[in-house]
Image (cartoon, rainbow, N blue to C red):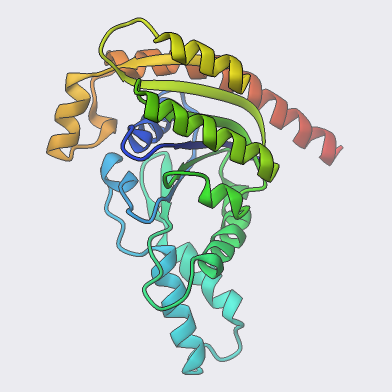
Length: 268
């Protein structure tokens, strides 16, 4: 059973950076293989991890539909064609693989592409003990049930009132939609000092978050983003990485033991 970590929050607060650093943390601690899922149509997680995505789920959807309409997939259903092409769209790397949602290239909404991704993840995650899902701003992907349950929900904000108000609304929306998670972490990103603002403490109480942590506005991370270099190449003593590891490791360690215990109980 996979341990699923989903990252969400307001656009522009550093969600993808946090997602990339979580992948880095898992790899550094031997928690692999990891499946990184870029569920943001803008597709930025590949660059953060030093990879290049050439095929997305949105593109696969269009290609499979065209193949099926021309009768080139003789003997295969449309779903089988999609599953084959999605498997081929995985970008493989050392210790982790990446799959990207992308944008549908033809007419129509995301609904069908999301259903494709849901089915693909159901198959793919069986091979990965850890899944890191980088969502688009908001809860679109989670609300469409791409994953049925999240082990660790990470909500990211900056120190602004607008950012925290957005997290508050997202949490209310998640509650209304019945999105399930075992643990909730609130991260206040790009702090200019080491003290969490009072509104962050109040927000934690409102969300009933299990943990809250602040990550500093970090010059090396800014330089990496400007240069487009991989977060996997950051020095191991980076302050943001250290703080994130201190926050996450106890949660992940305990949570993974629980999921493994559930899997053993089911197979007994």
